[in-house]
Length: 168
Image (spheres, rainbow, N blue to C red):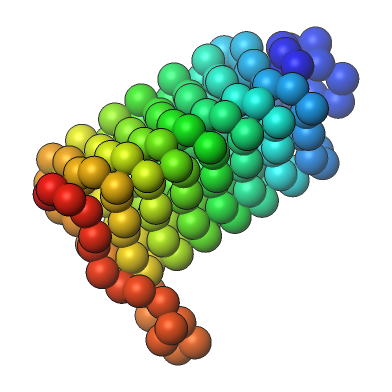
C-alpha cells in the first residue's frame, strides 16, 4: 500500500502535516511517500514493513510484521512494535513500549513511557529514556545519557527498572 498526497481521506493541516482520520491497516507493507509528517488519528498496522520518506505519528500504536523506518522520526501514543528493525534519522518515541527482535536505531533520541526491548542493539546519538527498563540482546550505544525507571506511577512496582545488555 502506497500513501501519497492523493490517498483517500488524507487532508493537509495548516502546518503542512498530513492527517488521516481512523486507522491505517494493510495486509501488505506500507510506503508513505509524503513530503511532510503523516499523523494518523488511530493506529498503524502493516503485515509487512512500514517505510516513510518523512515522519510518522500515530495517536495509538504502530505495528509492523517486518521493520519500521522513517527519514524523520517515529512517534506513537501507544506502543511501537516490529519484527525486525525500528529506525529513524531523528527520534523514536512511544507512550508505552518500543519492542523488536531486531535493532532500534535513532539519530537523536529514544524515549518510551514503559520499556525499550531489542533483540539486537539499541543506538541513539543523544539519549535514551525509559519509564521502566531497557533491554538489548547485544549492545547499547548512546552518545550522552541513559535513564531507566523514570516512571513515577504508583502501580508499576512489578516492572523491571534496569538496563540489561551484553555491552554498554
